[in-house]
Length: 437
Image (cartoon, rainbow, N blue to C red):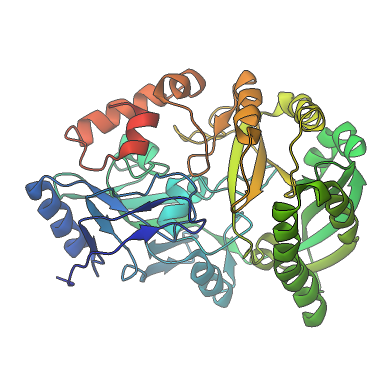
């Protein structure tokens, strides 16, 4: 067995931390199962943590055992005929994207960063934007999971389908995922068209833009009428990526180094934020480029922040966004980070934020260290008035009673949890709040 250690854990944003009794890094599913049984015998809880990109305490082990899957990164099988790849849970998405590209394959859709582990991303509902394609968890075809009794179970639509329904997006509440099988397809190019637009124009044309384009998203800069829109559509090529110098200047230097400085100024001098927002909104110019899908979907994000994101019914989206704009305009808040808006089709995952309904995601952010001053509180009040569902890995205050009212299959998931983990080996304070005791 790998030697266990104790160390303080904190997440990427720095707003969650814990000092578990033990941190372990098993190198195989068998070793993982032994660690689960050992913790159970000691009366300790078990939590697995990936890259720590959740803003909630979903991965906090408290004083239990923290499992780091850093040694569980193998590619078990690449099946071209079946259109699947099976990888271990700790493999970072960045590594998965590159190994698939080397095999001329690709995931269908993904979020806008790729630093998460595959199990961490899927277990919390990480998603991108898409007219027809959903979250990473919706692309899972089978998975392997270690349960509370130390048994290793494989599930798929044909094998243990109920476990498959729950575990694809399981919040770490059913067990520790050790391997995942994703559906993949031949590698493809995307053409990205990024264009500044006015807020009212984006909302007036929202249905058109979200329907015509395979992937549509936009950012609105609070205290302005300015938006930056992005439309990604499949292309027959040829590839026309951004020149390396321009890509570095716009997507790294301006979006990270300069933006970090801007956010620091806004945090120190809140009165300057509206003027900064006007400049920032105009800094994003129109551009078009074509590249491999994962290079278009993802980009580096090094400016640290905290985030709240709610999924609202698509038919309510423009109403919600207009109400959000009015809310900010009548407040004394100074919001330096743009509001991000994405879409997703309905899916059948029990705890997916898009479960059973076409969805629009509205994400609000605060630069690290910025006083909250009621911004997230009032945004959450607005979102829940429209039956919004919070992203499991992003800040919110909802509890099991509320969540049961907005997820049709919530009771199915908690019943499955009761059967698989009656002793709550995989529980923590966050899961007790959102799933109940």
